[in-house]
Length: 184
Image 1: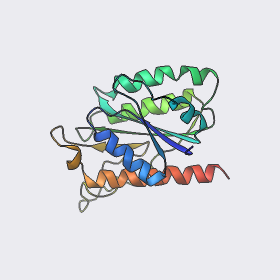
Image 2: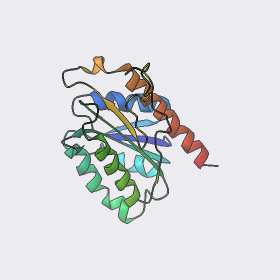
Image 3: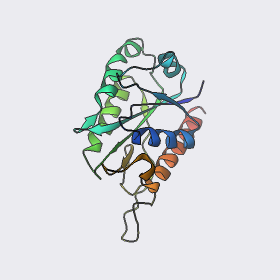
């Protein structure tokens, strides 16, 4: 079992691509929430065995997708048994606009983690916010509490901003560092 499990929902494939970049940076395992809001067979056991759980979902209408919310509601069973207590947690989201109320989705993930008694890991990155910076620079959108990315609504998965995917990989590396440091 992987120490890091990235549990995510992706409506159009963009959030999945971000999840893959986080996994590439962290060495984590992907666990997709299906279109009906369910985990695959053995998914809950994967999460129980993880040292860190990374939550991911697109931001729709100012919050995570309903499929992710269904998963979160179903996590009341591990919550009752304190299964995720003292694990590390982190989160990421993608939406079409540069802001798009992404922070409310990150806050949703943070609140979920705190209800489970988890320790939150932020991005640990400074933003690229000088005039010389572009969207292809690391953390150009300035996410501190979690990873935020933006994909234009008419862009395919292959047209995602390379800087966002580079930032997602760095976010995964940050989570792996946190897991290694937390284990000491």
